[in-house]
Each structure stands twice: as C-alpha cells, then as structure tokens.
Length: 375
Image 1 (cartoon, one colour):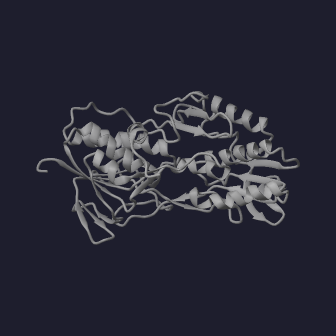
Image 2 (cartoon, rainbow, N blue to C red):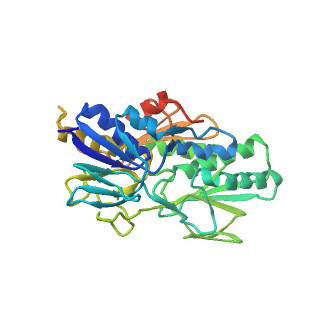
Image 3 (tube, rainbow, N blue to C red):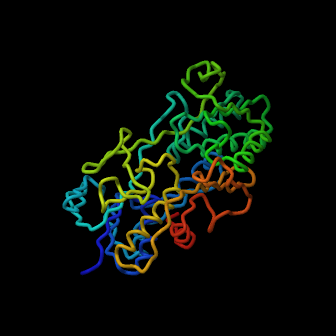
C-alpha cells in the first residue's frame, strides 16, 4: 500500500461505480481505493418504468463483485461526515477512513413535487401504477394527466410512462380514455431539443397523447389538475415524477437545496482534495449518463494525480444520452446541452453509444454487460 494514492469513493450508484471502475482502468495500480457504501446491490433502476406494464426487469448486481473487479475494498457503511482538513472520512458505524482524495457520489433524495399525484420514483411505486392501469382496464379511470413539475431535473421517465400507458390502452382497444401530458417545457424533452424533441413530439401525437407545453402544474384536487396559465384540466388521476433534494454532508459546503457546489473539474468548491459527481452535485440535470461523464472526468484527474501518464483532460462538456422506452421500438436520444439550443440533438432506433442500454456509462456499462446478476 505504501506510496499509493489513498482514494475513498462514497456511494453505490452510477457515479460511484463508474468512478471506481474508471479509476482502476486509468490509474494502473497507483491507487489504494475504498468504496464506502451501505448498499450491497446495484439495481438497474431506470428499467423500473417498464415493470407496471409487464415489460423488462430490474437486474441486480453485487457491489462486492464490482469492487473486487476494480481491486477496491468495499466498506458496507454510510458516510457520516468529512474532515477535509485532516483528510478523514467518518462512517455511521464509528469507522474512520484516512484519504488523500475523496469522491462523493451518494446521490440525492427523491421527494414528491406535486402533492396528490401518483409519484413514480421507481420499483417502490410499481404497484400504484399497476392499480392505475387496472382502473383504466375496468373503465373506472377515463382521463389521466402526466404532469412534469417545474422543479423536476429529469423528465424522461414521465414521458415513458405516458407512452407506455398509451400503448397499453391501444393494445387492449380501450375506448374513451384521454391521456394528456402537461409540461413547463417549450416542447417535449426540451433539454434534448432539435431532432430528439421532434421525434418525441411525433411519438406522442401518433399515440394520441394531448400535450400542453409551457404549462405549469400547480395543484391536484378531486376535479383534476390546476395549471398555470390556463386554469383547471379535468382528470381522474394525475401521474408525476419526484423532485431531487440534496442531503447535506457535515464538513462539506452545500447550497440551499443541500447539493454540493462543484467547479468544472468536479472539485467541491474551496476544497482541493474532495470531488463530487452525480445527483449530489449542484449540476441542474440529475441523470445517470451525466453522472457517468462527471465520474470519468474525476477519475482521469485523480489518476493523473496518482502518477498515471495521462494528458490533461479536456474541459468538462456534459452530454445527454437517454434511452426512451416507448412501448414499441425504443429511441436513443443524444444532445450536447452546452453546444447550443438543440442543434446537436439526435434521435435513432439504433444505439448511439456502446454498449447501449438505459445507463450510458463507458466503464460501468461494459462491466454490467459481462457481470453475473443476482436475479
């Protein structure tokens, strides 16, 4: 262990595992890494949106196996606080981990943003969505609104729920069901823009989903959904997605939402040896592919610090990659949100990244494509 850079990576999600695997590949044995995570499994959560419709599966992977593949020790505990001056990470089990560099990737809380709506967060809300579909099948639910709250940082899963519900209705030839989508965006999935938004608009139209753009959902009540600026839209049920909220970490700075402020190299502002990636940061888009890109940049910087013969990394340029489940042929969506207003956006039925899938992460994607599951 002597002479190797001590790195502690905090978290068990996409950002943490991509950092761990990328650092192993880039540093070439120059780091002594610890993964601090209370989770024992990595679950392929983006696939959960298809579960209520009897499609797909959420595969599970042992975090200990991933850590072993990256020559990293896994400590099954949560982070309690950081002492950035003494370079110590304290766990909730009274453990202490000395480090030279720490990478915080412990995610964010998912909280309801539209009270009264069915909030789909993932696996824990599959049964609620199934009950909604049963109501549609029985004729008890005739009007459903899919509402994008103004504060949501990743809207794509709600579009998937709308498209999958429309496919469900069409396949069963259920008459008299009206599906609507309300969004404050100027056009569907405006974060992508360009051809990607155009493709989504076409899909929504083909499936008969009425779209209200530049419209803010405000309140759910027994008559439907209050929206601004147009008033009230009648609905039997309203479906929404959660808002991300940061979890302040003792010893580290955070903004008023609890997120860690980072610079364009992923460093927590004011701290040279603490980095952060993924949903825990103040980057406005909370998405697995974004977290993976941030993780790759941080792993590159840390590997160089450990002595790996790597060139200075290019300036951070986050790109959006999203696989949209439609009920039919999925769409791969790509955009460079820092390159203009959607001019770089692209939509395709063929994979736009390797190895494809819902999570666009180079090192983690390769690992998951070859690793055994716990299913």
